Length: 126
Image 1 (cartoon, helix red, strand yellow):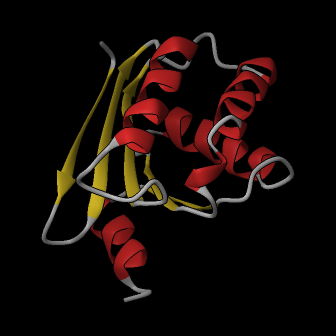
Image 2 (cartoon, rainbow, N blue to C red):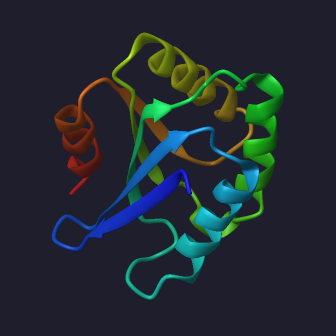
Image 3 (cartoon, rainbow, N blue to C red):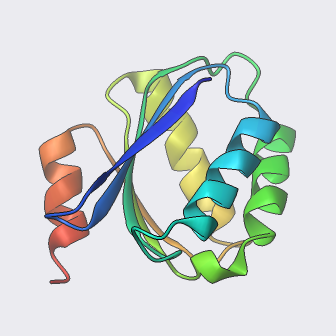
């Protein structure tokens, strides 16, 4: 599986790691897991790591499919999500996702190159 996550109970954030080619089925299963968790609410704040993702097949149509999957989980609401993308390609693709998703989804996303900055932003509302 190319998606895994852990819940940081102390900070109350979900840390999601993605690797390789991420399939639509895996994204859908991730959202199902988030929605059905007894440990955290569906709109849990999250940090997504994109540093090991294979972006070779990611295009606008791929992103549109991801948006459609996300729309199936309205309980996720306006969840805050910090994307960590250290490399230039990962950073560029996630910035494109951020821009395009703003027209499609009720979520609050920011893109960072460093984990510490992402975590600081994510926890700043407390």
